[in-house]
Length: 409
Ligand SMILES: Cc1cc2nc3c(=O)[nH]c(=O)nc-3n(C[C@H](O)[C@H](O)[C@H](O)COP(=O)(O)O)c2cc1C
Image (cartoon, rainbow, N blue to C red; front, top):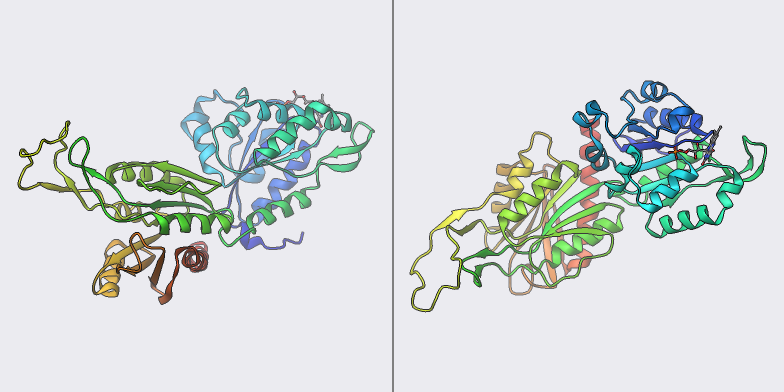
């Protein structure tokens, strides 16, 4: 079997959903194709699907137990429905029965497969297979169109002679065709299929009910990176400090105020991330206490006791299985020396150093960066943050894929 680009699929996490249709036997071949190129494939079957093929067959092909039951205590103890929902880079349901499609449209959670889909923000692709009358029925067409409007991909169905003897649209696409859709999905951009977690903007450390200690970060650089990464096919989760910027389309944003909140949100998301970009200007220290009410004039203390905030980038880079990390270092003097020291101390793969000046860096529309890694230095000259972000993502993707090749070799 010829594979157009097996490397693209190596290490990808694909959740294969199987619902109850006569074409379920073809899913075995699809699972085999994907496993053969190094995909990590887990299977969830509806109870209906188990009437057509045995879970044991797909377990033997993928090497992992097949999940069928929402209420299986062993399943919930191992990789439960929420963990499965978060784990996947892509969910493919093949075959997708008329019933399965209707349930997805309605937001039902009556099978494990539907529950996982409902609990997941992972992209979903359906390969419908059914009798052609069922496919052409206005109810099925309305369901599929509504799902497509929500961003669900629909692969097929193919036309031809069906198991029931009818001829028309409704056949499951061949496993090789479905495989090509998957390859195409993961080759849409240099970060296609990657989940990128990113922090952006400033943090605010409260002094009292109305005052805070903050910094001049506008969030523009981080938001530009989020957009550039999404344009290269990445699934982007943005943890943003307070900014005036609108959330770019196709990006999941979590808004926070303080460094501690940013740390908590990043730690809650990081296990799903392939790449972590720490672009936020996080306060290193916060006031030890925060007055419940506004401090009155004349009662303001002469000095403040500050305590350290958690170091988000160091915490992520220090995880037992960290994502690929890109950090930022904004400095006013000895920029590259300080940045290289920071990169080595925190064991970060790639560090973007920038000099803060009147025309570039904080709260400006332009910036310049020097990328530092074990491979050397790359200077990206002063330009708009949008263009700079595109160049940065280009280099990040190159270095990330080189890193993956080394990890997988
Ligand atoms: C022999 C047989 C073949 C079937 N083939 C299909 C099919 O190809 N597509 C489909 O949508 N439903 C088909 N059905 C009906 C589904 O199995 C039925 O709607 C079931 O409830 C689907 O459950 P599920 O979507 O939860 O897996 C078939 C039923 C039988 C008995």
